[in-house]
Length: 253
Image (cartoon, rainbow, N blue to C red; front, side, top):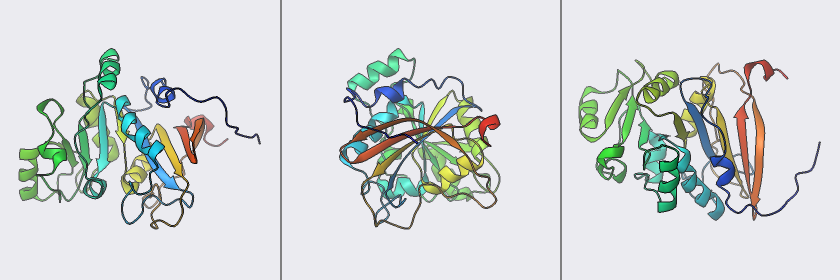
């Protein structure tokens, strides 16, 4: 055991995340999860993640989208948090151009039910070059699917449910190599169970007493996944942890 001690200030907290090499994913594309949890493991307060997030976490959360080719999020999180298109600041645009990325990552909403507000900003406000994507399954309601096709680019990834591997294969086929997943807990659990989470950026908020909702909800029968701690930072009382999935030959160690 060793202490983690506060050190010299980090000039730009995004820099350690930008320096990560995501060019060689274990599968079809690199998947980064970005979540926040309270000290008791809760992932929301009164149904909203934003209420749990501190000012330093909110700043990093927005800026982390610079790494992404596409931002993937579950439908319930979209409904609760009021998502909108991922507009970037000018300095972020410069960095993205230098890395050969598009100026703006589209949002990819995961939804089996397609119970979404198609007039909301995440759909109606998306520009043509970053049209919002909806990932659903073949057995989605036909009428809702027809409506969805007018508001978004549709990906069918599975028959009865959205299957993580098929969803990510489809995104990779569209040229999206780095996927930033912003939840929710059930979809994150599906990604972990499918061995598709390469990296987890986890902020620990100095709060307790939120909803009985963990950061990740594993589906029945899921195996235990193991991760390696790669970096830590602290800002005031908020802790920032970055993990990467352990290679298969190290998971029993």
